[in-house]
Length: 98
Image 1 (cartoon, helix red, strand yellow):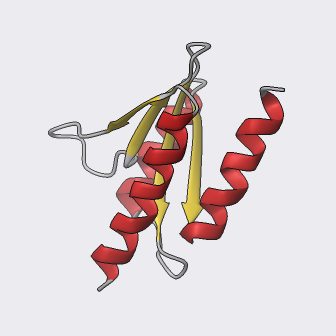
Image 2 (cartoon, one colour; image 1 turned 180 degrees about the vertical axis):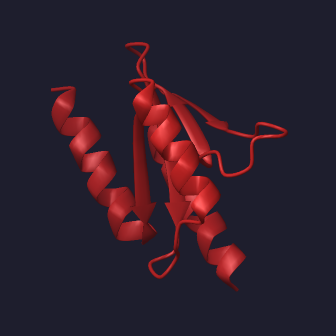
């Protein structure tokens, strides 16, 4: 059940960001456990990494390390917990592009 919920949250993010003209990749990096779930490339060329969790999900130590590593390299990384966080992220994204 948890995977279905996380998959639904991920689908919502992908659909909404694609609708806004973004490229929304499922991010997989063999040999690098814990990388964020999605890599979004905006129409402006900005790269945003997103780790998606259910409302009660927790970051693993590997995920925390990967997020820290990306941020140390000036990458934008969001951790979104549930559909409400996805909605808030989308509103924030929209407000920056007006």
